[in-house]
Image: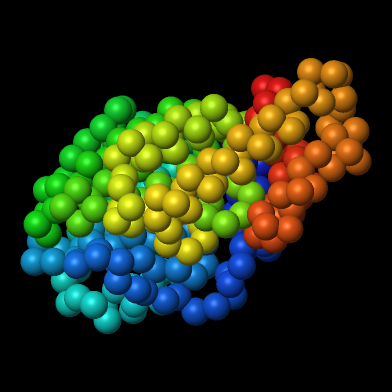
Length: 284
């Protein structure tokens, strides 16, 4: 296995397991629009579309959670899971792939997700069997489900999903609602790519649009605007120090984002980890 990829897979999953608020809590499903639900619990937020055409599922957290996730889905529909879409390759979003793949669920993802899972020697049943480059569209459960790639954002294989009739957008890990994000520079992620993803969604969304982050509570356009403003301040606070030749250790000591830490530093990444993540993303 490629060592950098292995670190990315393990690192993302370990940080999620150790640091995400409420990780130890039970899986919980909630409705965000007619026929559209979100499951929060262990790992990334799962999107679920239900209806007569079956279940369309976005991400699947960790393998041990599969049973609990399916139990939650059964509380809102008796239809089977037909399709699974991975928003990216990290283990807290793809860990249940093998379980679902073995049960006959058809797995979709961006081309780079399959490539990275293959490089990590992922089990055959966990691999996406249908991949796309730029975009694809599903038509089911009365929804036009537009899936589109956003380049080099959280990773190099991110997908965002727009349920057009329901006015719901699932952003995967291009949006962490309420706390500092992880940008996986080792796996093609970039700060400017995250901004591009955010701006794409802001162009689609209005004040009534439901925006599902990869982690954190379900949000709206105002939440995404606040997240964007935080990232601008973070980038603009760190980049001049890099330009002055400061090392990452110097930047950690300087605490250039101290004014943001109380509001944004209590989740996935603590302030020091976020500084290191941003330094890596801004210097690659």
